[in-house]
Image: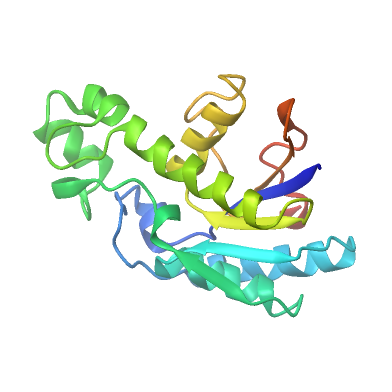
Length: 200
């Protein structure tokens, strides 16, 4: 049975604009981010896109995005900590520019984790993929929307597409959506990647 999945990155926050590491910090959407989420929700409604289930990271910026989408589709948002952004330990709340100056191994740890409390890419992939497979098993054949975060979604896509999508390439835009189809025998098929027609 084919199961369609739509992966959505949360709307913009002030910290996104400042290039500040958010991780598990509960940063709210900016006014612009709220507008992005509203426009995506309306776009999905106008395109008659339907979902049986809407899951979201329990972090504020993702939850706010999901709630604004849900309000246009009479959906209930189900949250999970498994969909959170990568945990970045002592890096959280600091700008990328500052981190590059303070940590000479910044680029290596950003790719691999394992120091300063930064979650490894493998840990992030594992928790994301495990959760997605669980909800597919729970709702086979039902359209599912998932609202999460840039790095966590990017790492998930790398795993699901077997490297067709690389972590951070492309960089997922705020409120972008990516469509995939899961086939129980053939695995994953990637359709639309990093789409933002609602922002044009």
